[in-house]
Length: 259
Image (cartoon, rainbow, N blue to C red; front, top):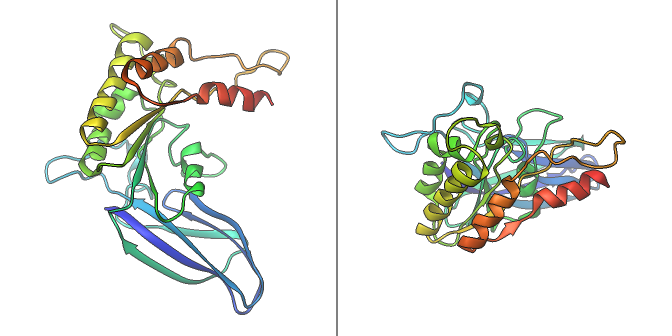
């Protein structure tokens, strides 16, 4: 388990090519790289690979549907596709010194395994070169609390180092919880503070993302109807108290969907 620098030489001596490169569960690294016949182009990026095991006694409590997937298996998977994919060479080497961006969240962040589903988390990799690696620990259906309870935060804490980053987006499932203490201002806010304390104890930086909007439109089809209640405000309140940077995806995606 760990981080790997990957160098792929795309193109062919025999034909023109157009190649898209993904890794693990469809994380995007290069798209539509066009090469003329006889020409090649080198693309470099960094990939994080993991299994559920933290140490001899502890592991992530993955869901049944996660077992056997490319996210958790004991190999590094590269995927080449596109209109006319061509690969002339591949070089891979381990490098755990690379600064890492850990992603925590739910279905809007996780590496979706099958077309046509996708998340911002698995497209995020497209914008970084081999000097930064993205480790996407998000999973569909999770709350901030279940992320912690299933040892997913513990796994991050076992590898995180000074200078790394952790980006958190939760609420879609937290807002469905019922019972004593649930809601934006208690369980949710408390769990966000747990993330902050753990990450900062390791000398890393935490960043909050308010929840992505659902595509829940008004009757005229023009305006997004908010479904997140107090959760974006609660996240911002915790961030203000604790001086955590916030990316307001809630507002950004409202504008995006309405546009």
